[in-house]
Image (cartoon, rainbow, N blue to C red; front, side, top):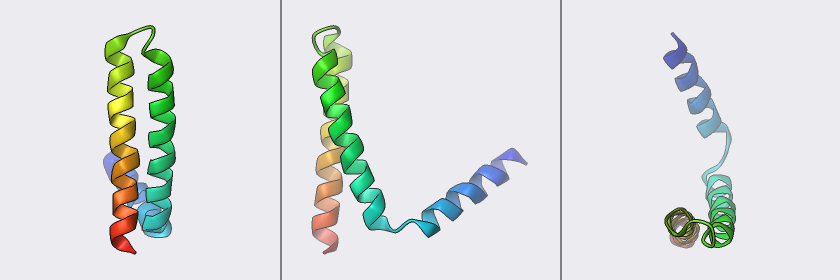
Length: 70
């Protein structure tokens, strides 16, 4: 029951928001994660490096996707 409700909400969100908006949002999240990772790397090398890696992947992946779609 709850799974069906969540699935409906997610499908509705995906249909209403254009793909370009999701890509820009992911690039902003990637930049933020990279910045947080750069700050955290002095406290914990593993957590900081993981955040930087995931943030960079999100940022570059969304930019490449935007470039290929246009």
